[in-house]
Length: 507
Image 1: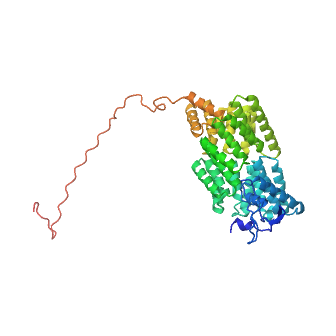
Image 2 (image 1 turned 135 degrees about the vertical axis):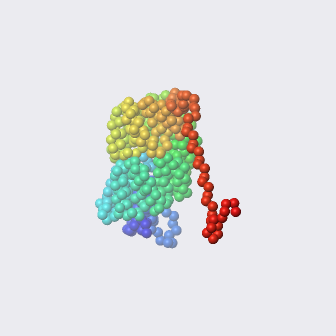
Image 3 (image 1 turned 90 degrees about the vertical axis):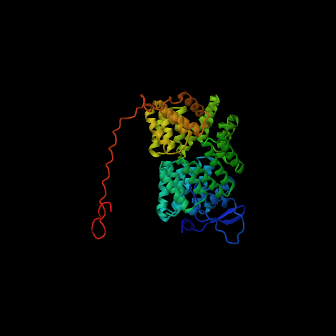
């Protein structure tokens, strides 16, 4: 048997909501969308009641799926009330930690992370690692990944895998951790194992992530289509639609991306991520006023530093520099709060500082981050920061690391092209500017027009091909040696006549 039986080892406490008592699964808990623990409701065979809000949320976070806001709120309230009188219930502490993690994902509020850490550590105090508290261990790995501490995430995921190799919930954590560390082959191996043990929504979402990072866009789309088929609740379907929109936008299919984002919002109007995506697509389509509106709405629902950076750059592209200072200030405040709560915002802060602040500070910040996490996002940001300080020779090494893994990003290609132009490689700059425009000509309201302008100024290669490809003198046939004449074949000897005597010639 696989991890299903391993997760049903303790009886679940009663769960109270709307005046009724039901039974929730024994072992539970895990992560935002990333790393899933299984919770199975313990119902009798003749219990035909539909699951209540807290049960729906417990099942969602247990399966690594998004949970609806109202259900999540019910689950948090239910477990907090239960634990007030049952402080030694390790399973419920793990459930509560997972619910806090999902709250952090939905709201982008880093204040939920310390709460999740406290609940998961309490679960491990009651039932330590040595006794196989896999729910809390997996939750700790998911928490570390959410904070972008991928080394710690890998440690927890590998610890669970070492003790229970067939426990599928360890593998979403490992996929995210290996990806964040830049070990893309390791991420693919973990994803393959997850697909063997538990094909479903969490596995298909991880497969799409792995394929996208390797540059296999068609495979990523197919994986998300499978995820859409596996999604049950509206909030799950909305998340898959958002991910499809992200892939479409990266491919330069801006109108299709807008359609996917709007479908996600119709399915789950509280989907803040899709609202931010719609803002990005609207900006790409030249509908800047609507884009500004959606960015502000998205930041009101889920204040993410990257959304604040995108809004600031959009306002700058419109000549509204004074207004742009507000989202830039929001970005700095969000990053500071995230740092206080243990969240690593080095990449977005480094990109902001490189273009709008102190590029030297960005280099120092991102160099330290590269020492921890050697992934393509850090490589791209560090290369760009080095370029902004004038060190294009060093910048090119990181730009190559960012673009040669396989991920097709117009931003990465543009950054590399500008750096190559800085070192005098006009051919490389032309090639990567063309790649950026081919991938997504609307990738940024600031850098998109700059990339188009740079490509026009670089121009086309000179006629006649690269240097030394065409001969400078007319071709003349070489003086080749004549082949030796073939020797005449020797006559074959006559065959002896029957009886051992030779026949006379001509007879």
